[in-house]
Image 1 (cartoon, rainbow, N blue to C red):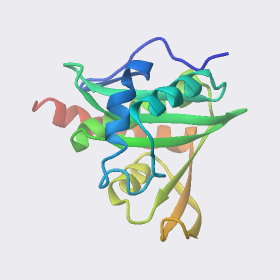
Image 2: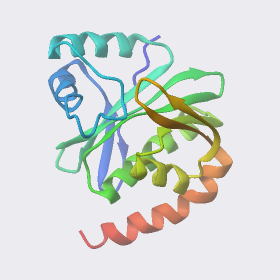
Image 3: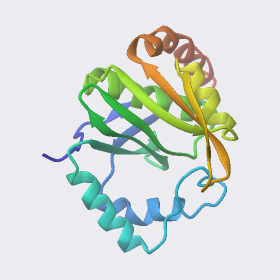
Length: 186
């Protein structure tokens, strides 16, 4: 069974669509951005290697990866829900190039997808302590810290968060009100 969502996850400012082979060059290029990827595992190889990774990812039975686009269909990054086991999964692979409101809406869309479409009850997120924007967003979306450890490879402290459906739903409206307020100005 392939893990591909055939619809669009659509918000006021952004939409998420399933990654496709044709996204290989774009995703390879953004994975080369040293500033954005300093909290992710390094990618080597070529755009063709990235295309092969996308093919394997689409075939995995526990993995969804999305491309984030603005309303003009300009790519603004990627986001994923993966390692799905029963009613839990990991959330991440986030490379966000939108403004803070677009990025927050992309996060809302993928959390809604995980909890409402995939029927998950718990998400795990691993975020490096220095990644302040992602830490803030995770906390605003109901993330609760459950563990810290030093990652020798990255030479940074990793914080593990759990986001339950209940904790997310209790925070979602507040984040959505900010998105609505700021999107009305656009």
